[in-house]
Amino acid sequence: MHEMSIASALMDQIMETAKLNNLVKVEEVEIQAGLLKQVVPDVMQAAFEAVISGTIVEGARLKIIEVKAEARCLSCGQVFEPKVDNFLCSVCNKADVEIIKGNEIILKSLTGKNLEEEDKNES
Amino acid sequence: MKVNVIKNVLQANDIIAAKNRKVFKEAGLLGINIISSPGSGKTTLLEKTIPTLMPEQKSIVLVGDLETTRDADRVAPYAEEVVQINTGMSCHLYANQIAESLTELELNKADFLFIENVGNMVCPGEFDLGENVKVILLSIPEGDDKVAKYPTIFRAADMVLLTKIDLLGVLNFDLDRVMEDLRKLNENVPVIKMSSLAGEGMEEWLGWLKEQRNKSIGNQAKFITPE
Image 1 (cartoon, one colour):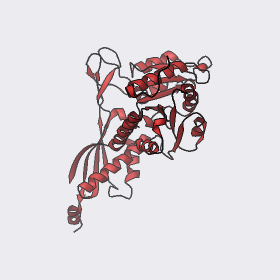
Image 2: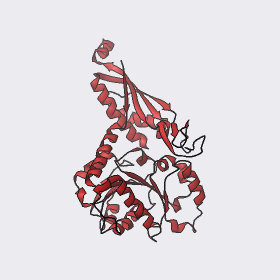
Image 3: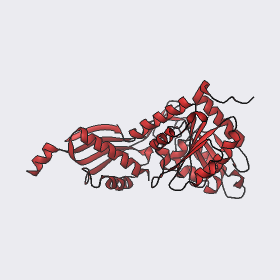
Image 4: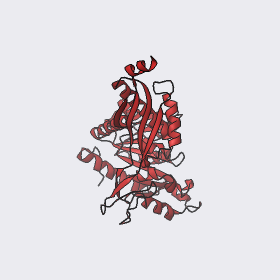
């Protein structure tokens, strides 16, 4: 259930970004989740809903973009797509790799309203 | 309006972890993050390891548990200092919990800082604490399917200890299967077959610890390797 910890870290960054951009309401949050981080979308969604409750993010849509893993073999240089349980190089059959992609969770964008837009909306 | 961000979500934790790593280096400490499921022998390993390292090398222990100070009480007679971190509902330690504990300790008194993480094979793997090495324990009673079931944590391992190895003949555990699953994840990770209680593998484990400390601390080493 590391999704809960990820969701609270995400929430800190959302609030920081919202403040920096004078957002008073957040409507959509887009994140990139590397497949190696093993984020379960349904669990992430539930954790997200728990942390946004009672904040300016409440009711926002969470968009999760899954990013495939990519690794480079340190023995032969081959770039390949490893599986979570198999990092054997497709050429030399050794699991000695450097991860290029798929091991990160990134806050990509926020969509929301600043005070001006919110006022316009209400009038 | 849409705001593009591109920010690592776990950045706050990673920044503190990097600071912890620097503190360890300056204090001449090797930071060891010990991860396993509950009951695979993390505390017993420490109870046997720390007194065997003494008197040449001394240890500080940080213990993470949801509740109680039982593990801290067990290692307290051997360690220079022990801090129990109760995580409440959290199933892993965060770098900031380590950073806070470090401020209370006299780090120069020790050579090794063992961090016994909360018993869990999933979440601790995602949170860097600033350790120099991650040691993963897999005990024989847990079964030979665990490497395949929890691959992420084993891929991140710098050392795998197969604990309670004295039960190998008693329980149905296929050692080859474990080694095969492990090699699919991590070609180079060393594996030691251990029984903390019977002493098997202890010498190899201590040798590895000292080697890692020399590698990470370099000529700042406090202890003198025995002739």
